[in-house]
Length: 167
Ligand SMILES: [Mg+2]
Image (cartoon, rainbow, N blue to C red; front, side, top):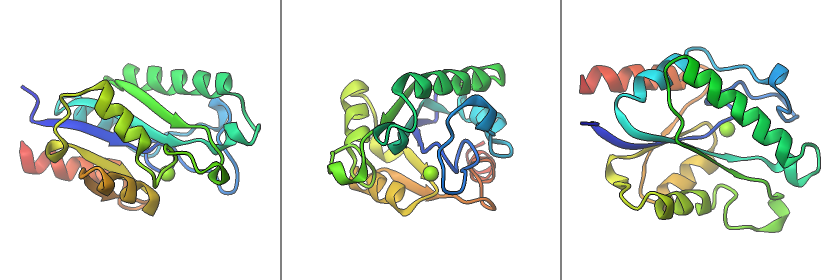
């Protein structure tokens, strides 16, 4: 019934507005990108599942706790649900770039974990949307379709284009 498989979304700069030189630490600082909630709602009817894969080095730096980040993500998820969208799971990497972990993008550990958690994922019918080269690199490592967005060509614009093609 779903026409596409899994939509992997980066968070900062894709779902919410990225802050220059600092981390989004609480709900007051969390501003959805224009049209993001609405398009996620529409895409929830097209994709079998929507997952978030996000680097959150602020945790590793001690700028925010994992509990603060969890609270922020719960808020984001509920706001998306209020608009009619569904986020199936949120993966985040808390590590410092210097830790050389396998999850921080451009490494693809978070995607690999998702492939374990959802073994039916069909990579060829899945997309990864990000605003950084590291997102695109991570997606390509796992043979996902990748799309780079920015403040002009947003998730909303890409999503509307996709919907116009497949509907
Ligand atoms: Mg980003």
